[in-house]
Image (cartoon, rainbow, N blue to C red; front, side):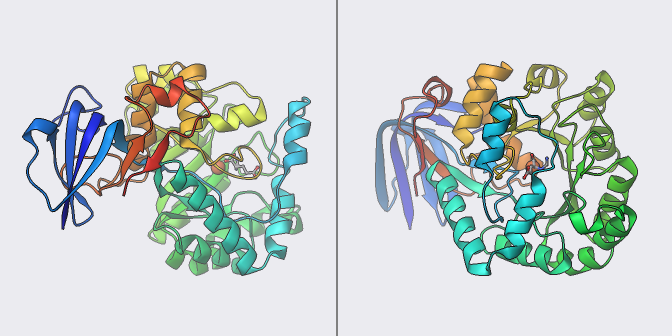
Length: 384
Ligand code: NIG
Ligand code: FE
């Protein structure tokens, strides 16, 4: 069964071989989808016959967003903490403890319902691939539970037992790192594709370079791919560690030295920027131009979580990236699609070249510029 999607005013493929520039842009275009994959793209006048026909009536079609960083398994919410920050309080990760308590106290059904609602909310806004982290359980049983639940919704599951040192281990940090790299990892690895660590010596709750290295190397030895939360609250070792160990992505990258940028530029590690976090913590935005101009692979993601950014909207992040981080609308869209796919080391999503997963997203607009031009307007939705 094949479907011809026609009436596409502008098609973004992210495949330079399919159209103009890095976005692989085509106007007056068509796409043929067959068996859940892209079978053909090109000018509408050249479109082959298909079993079925879908006319998008002069709207734009882009690849589905790949949200490569989200924390969606949690209980409770922290709106009061957000309001306090808007009054001037600083974020240091301390609020994570209250989400850990609420998550441990929540039933599977409650966590699953919240997770399902957030994933549906993302999909309704054009996100077709999402990574989901554990990290609000922080006991063996609670981390396994979070990953099992996440695995019901995505293949991109990430073990984040090293999110913070939980209260019951506050004066026994080394013991907690031993748990995360030992028994907890053994129990969680079968349910995870990735391991992540909140490497942030500036926070008393997160992990320093040595602890982070232990978490990442143990995860790697257990067969997991590596991701790092780094350089969010201040300059630190996260980026260098991520590059040295070959992590797929280092996320936040708000405070970078010249050496950090240089290391990223010479590596396969993607710099994932999360501007919703800077918005919601009233922090300076990362310098995206400096990274792009140095040739670093950049991704954009939401970091949807109850603490630092309770938004599931990739279009909101695209608008922030354009308005606050001087990315062009095209760079921002590419970072939120192909960038996210690279950050997850996936080649079947994030683009619409022939053979890609047919994650077509339609914009209620004639071109992709509208994603940033019309902030806060729900333009993007999945087509199929
Ligand atoms: O990516 N920085 C660490 N972890 C999350 C926030 C978690 C929370 O505050 O609940 C982040 O920003
Ligand atoms: Fe995060």
